[in-house]
Image (cartoon, rainbow, N blue to C red; front, side):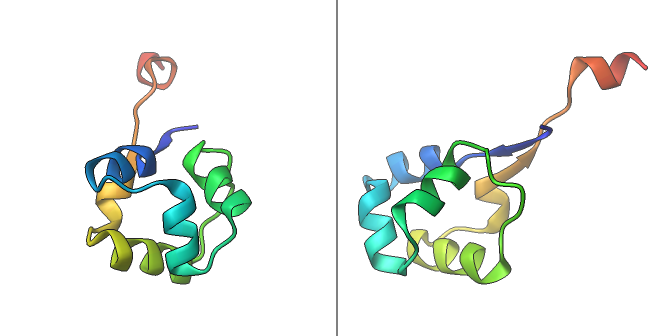
Length: 74
């Protein structure tokens, strides 16, 4: 998957656990975990907004487009 989720990095920078974030924004730990591990197929804007608001960051701080060598070779 070319989209890289950097939620773990942001949590580390903010010295916050996934559990703390979950409690603060009212999103289940399971759903945040799916997002953090990059297994999510979609993210609601309301979820992204809540995360960014709590972590005081921009969406681009959490998501990155990663190039793959396989696609570059074509």
